[in-house]
Image (cartoon, rainbow, N blue to C red; front, top):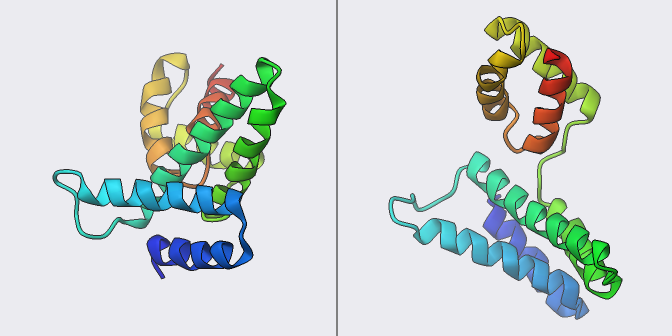
Length: 149
């Protein structure tokens, strides 16, 4: 079942339950999918990797907004962002833990032959491709820095 089908089914359920936060979140996902499908050069259907990337972008936007609102003392605005974040994360593939990311990154480091921080670009290139949709690139970067330093 495609992401769009899952989102539409969840949107129908949210409408029946009159869950406005869920409806807003699901409509944001639906809108992002439609925009991605209508971009020039886009295929009719999105691949799983493209869907995961799209969802991670939405999650990152919600996290950034919530952090910004919280830092300014606007918890009334941060709370809905965090609720939307939780709903969007339901559609992401299972995220890897930091230990799992570290294990995969260390294997990539030995595969690439990286020895110092100068090789971070090589490692990040391979790691972001292999771990796309499974974890946040910020976490990958932190783990790579920790293992190479």
